[in-house]
Image 1 (cartoon, rainbow, N blue to C red):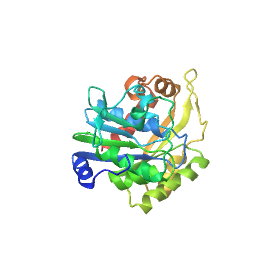
Image 2: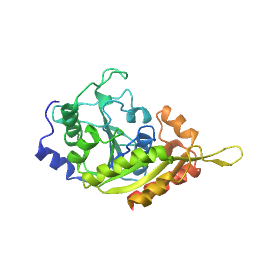
Image 3: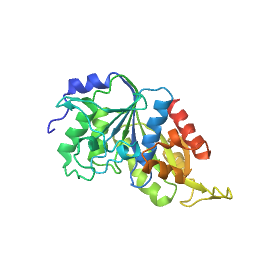
Length: 264
């Protein structure tokens, strides 16, 4: 795993993938992986052949959120079979599938991480896809840089929470995109308000509107707000996607509206 994917093989793999989006955030804890998983599942459920790459090598959470913790992949040095779910409409790749134990840590430096990410993109047998969603770890370091240089995404989807301390850090992801000439496809404000299920009163636990203000400031599309919903957490812990098993409530409406905007 020490050598990056062969450039010709990488080009061949990417040639049959429609749109590629990387999910970014300059700050951890904003629900970026949750957004990536639910976006990918929503696309798959709508009939779009979708790939989901978990490029977080040190804290891969996508398999847990999809109930795939015990899954393993087949293949050899240049052919990696992704894990299929949702009747084959969603193909998933993560370093978690290569670890012997769910609690094993990955202790790699930058060059090896770049090689592994390029292999995950180029050597995975994705097949023909309508969308490839790439969940990237927080920050602007090795992993997101390798993803952008290797996968050449069509755009970045930036996830933030509403409060100023979050948007302050997330703006670094905007600058990251500017410096790499990567289009910002849109900004999502996650954990935006909480509607009490008993009295229907909304409380702005983490403030509200910060993501939308940031979108205006940087001239990027605002895709929408996702409120805090306890069922999001409960379903993720059970390995279930909210867009697949959640209630048809304001949160579901918000998520589907965001997906519609991305597809459009």
